[in-house]
Length: 166
Length: 406
Image 1 (spheres, each protein chain N blue to C red):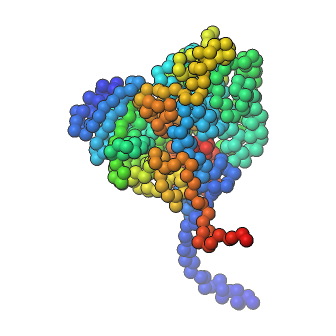
Image 2: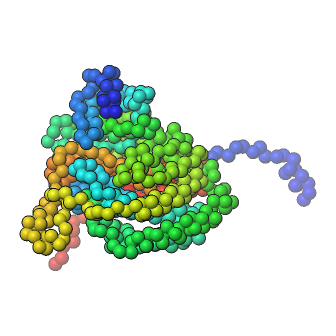
Image 3: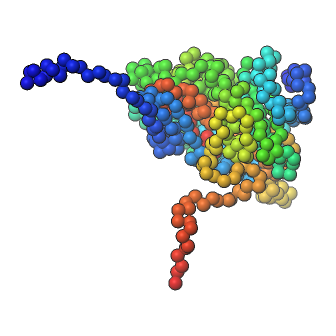
């Protein structure tokens, strides 16, 4: 099955494919960031592929690498029963086109990626933090975010000098 | 006096259509029928929900971040704490992903016991759901019955693992220890008594007129919308999509058992109820087949460098002792790579995406929680409907906030 996916994709988007890998029979295709929406549209609508179900969308942080982040799309086809994984690479501060027009479920997933990694999605209808509170600073799943960092949650009277004990 | 009244009726006031405005109502985070700490901001026009915005994250504990600082074995107890009413399913999904990463085959005996326990977990999870859902809508007694029956299942989990809820019984390569004596008879007792209990729930609810009024046609979603929203599990099957990962991508030897996938057509709250009740019956079918066919053999695949050596050997053999020490302290290092593995949890597709960088700790673990995605379809199910239906719909999605917020 993996060959068919790759063949159909190469016919239409030869220039967009950056890297192809296979591990434990799972196909991973890295594509150019700007072409992700047309590629996803093609994957969903192609009669041989029919990837109608976006299983998961997440980010991975590689701080030493340039571009720094991966955005990973795990796709599934309910009718054809096959899976594939797509990735785009994006640097800190860059935006990724949103796939919400292709799969509605991407809405919350992309919000989570934005919340956890700070990757912005162009064309997302409602890009807000989802798990962390709205006034949270930083993006917890970045590798440089310390595991035990604690924000001061209650800062009422923070400017008042602390009482000194005589 | 009469004249006065006459004059008032003679000049009828012109009734203008009153100006209306919508009202914002906060439902939750502390609300008994949100099953945890879910907040839904409802915009209401009279009793009609114009807009619903779910707000989550109140239980966020950074489990994915914590996982990155633990060795692969230390992650197992964290998986329990996500969907805490179906912890064995979470264990299984994570371990299948790790075993895929390591390319390990699990011995048949361990597979059968995993199947038995995850199916019992499915029943336990559905019992919590049917009880709390019925309670939300106003049928108090079902909750008491359902939790009574769930105790028997939790006793089985306690018997095998020592814990009622946070079991962590499955380990890389198989099980933590062999099943104890009395396991077989306990499970058979459940198999014998439980079908009648399901009939009891059905007698209480399935043709109950109040139940029908509260659920039929409520919160319906079409199959197309459901797939677009990423909905999986019983909710999707209630829309008529026959997709069950146990059938489509059998794991842990599910292909050896005969069972049906219950589906319905309408995709409303009532159909979800019927699908889940039927799923409990099918789970019993699987448990019965698996229990009758538990093969002989070891309960764990002793992969060198990955699985602990048997305890007797550790106590008598210095090599095994060193080996155990190293494994406990350092863990094991899977090859570089990434895998995604999903199972059919009681709530839907539960997936684990693990990236390994070749060290003893996972580089990234992403959980695909079914409840998170199913909850995102809530908006589609309740907008334009009555406020009283919101409680029924939230109950029918069967959410566990521990899993949504992670």
